Image 1 (cartoon, rainbow, N blue to C red):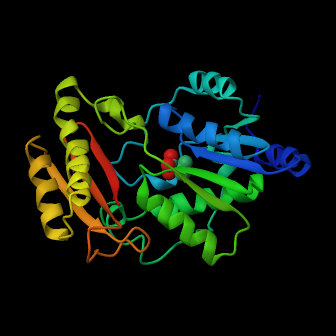
Image 2 (image 1 turned 30 degrees about the horizontal axis):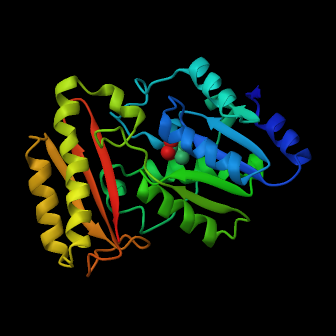
Length: 276
Ligand code: PAF
């Protein structure tokens, strides 16, 4: 595996690569969720690139850009073990040279849910992803379902800008007790982690309710919220049942997605589950 910092060098190698190029965009601090994406890319593509870049433009003021975990050596060892061909780790100056002023925005879909609470977040995500897609010329890009809205936004951008690539959404990877894997889980105290298990319990309870025939959106949301409130969160940003493509409020729980964002003292967690 080669570790490359310069975008132009990655572009050059990719222009000579044979077969389908698979990209796994990450911000590093890799866990089993990311590694499942690398494995999927390895399975589906001929040449696999993992990008490791903590993108400053997707963090709002007062968010955790400075304290976001950075463990480049560990990330490199994990990518090597999973058989990635390139680990692309650019600097912020290489990705956003002085005077950078071009942004990609997906309107509407980014004004709700996460976008309502983190106003500049998705503009940063779409811009960096489009740059990564262009640098690598990937035919497939792999994203985790954990960031459900992010995948919807990237898919919409890809479709509307006629980008020649497939966006592959891979299932959430959870700890054995149900907590969805996230690099931000490292911020939690032991006590918070125990309390946060209520979120995945709420997700599974919602899925069971739909499996048992419940179709009423309000009932699913009420049950999920009650479960989450047992964990004494600092705030619940949303617990909501939505259409899995448009993210508009769902009318029928079957075929929808339940999404939640919950704050504890040291962390803000998101989770979701498809209700089929
Ligand atoms: O999901 C993430 O880790 C980031 O939002 C991404 C897609 C790597 C863009 O910086």
